[in-house]
Amino acid sequence: MPLSTEDDNGPHEGLVSEHFAYRVDGARFANEQSTVWRDIQSPVSHFRFVTGWGCVDILSHGEPRFAVVSCKPRESA
Image (cartoon, rainbow, N blue to C red; front, top):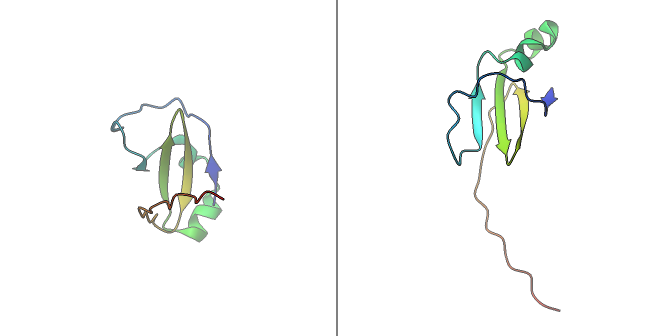
C-alpha cells in the first residue's frame, strides 16, 4: 500500500472544514504509482486523511472503516 505525506501542490478543491477523510480522483500521487502495482491491486482507490497541518495519502483496494470509540478515564493509583 503506497503512502505519501507530501503536498502535491494541487488544488484543494472540495475540502470541507472540520472533515477528516476524502476519496481523491486524478491526483499526482495516485498517477505516479507503478502501473503494474495498480493493475494487480485493481480496483484501487485514493484516500486522503487530513490531520492538522498535514495529510496522508493512501492507495488501497479496500475501503476505510471508521468507528467512534469512547476513552475510559484512567483511575488514579
